[in-house]
Image (cartoon, rainbow, N blue to C red; front, side, top):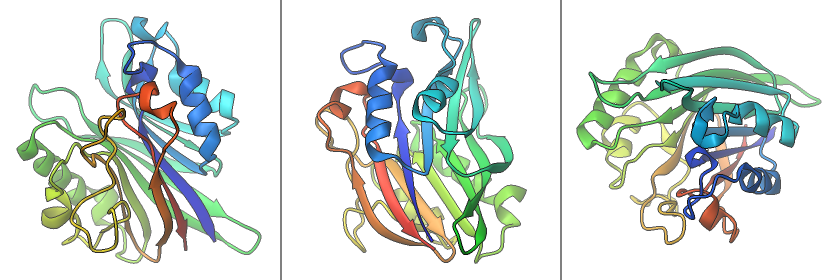
Length: 246
């Protein structure tokens, strides 16, 4: 069984040119037609994005029948967080609060997705994350996530992905936390590399902030970032795409 995952911090569909243009995000996502789309910085009812529910809008425009939204930040008018769009049914869904103290809201959206083809059906646990800008807080957030019942109770051979905007420039999280917990990084520049595929800033990438970690009987077949010219202006991040085989 094969499936495609895409993770993308869409920056509220406000590009590096400061224009709110969700149609650019639609065009980019349509180009890659991922089975599971993990989005960060998704507005719901915020004035800067014309009061739109971006998750619902993108799902409708792209024909995704299943979606889930995990809200991390609340404003006087509107809110925003992470969103998961899927061609496959979403069963369990829960937002895990990773906010530390009075800092900006952060979270991990847990969805259990029912993969299927003509031969079999499988469950895939997906954690769509957006971590802190602070290195010490990122480490605490990932340590907390790994200790939650959502993850700690999963068998080591269960199909599992943790992906999103890690804000981890130096790859510290992989070495100190994800690898000891049995996760491999699909978004390394090459097998065994310390460094991830560069995704930020979109117009001249220098950092691999957007990563996909996996555990269980999964094998990444093809992993790459978008090279569309449109993606260099549509958000300040580039999307990363990974084709997996079970």
